[in-house]
Amino acid sequence: MATAQTTLLVDLGPLRQSVEERIQSGFYASTDEVIRAGLLALEREEVASNEWDDAELIRLAEESLADPRPSIPAEQVFRELRAIHEETLQARSR
Picture 1: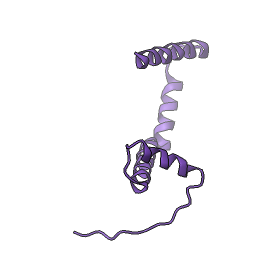
Picture 2 (picture 1 turned 60 degrees about the horizontal axis):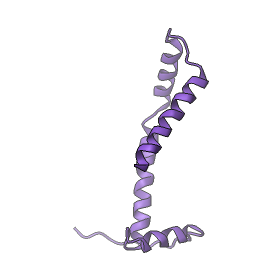
Picture 3 (picture 1 turned 180 degrees about the vertical axis):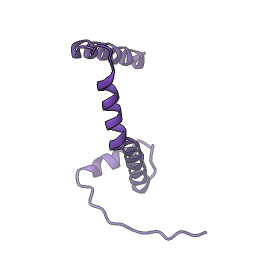
Picture 4 (picture 1 turned 90 degrees about the horizontal axis):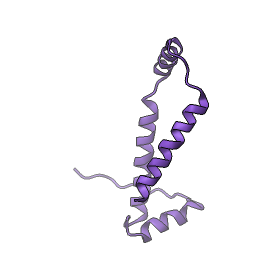
């Protein structure tokens, strides 16, 4: 089945340099490929963000508020997150 090609003129402004760099790196063969990859990434992002509907967020918040366990102080949470982040960075640099 043949598909019709549609030409679309787009002003990329300062993003043009980013497109050129991706083509020069050899990862993409053309501007078309870069734009298609960007649009596919945008679709994936939108699908992921749409998975959390309002009802689900409200349910999770109510569940959290009803949890009888004591709250964890924010300082402790951030300390643990920083430690995990540091471990991740160190593992990536190996």
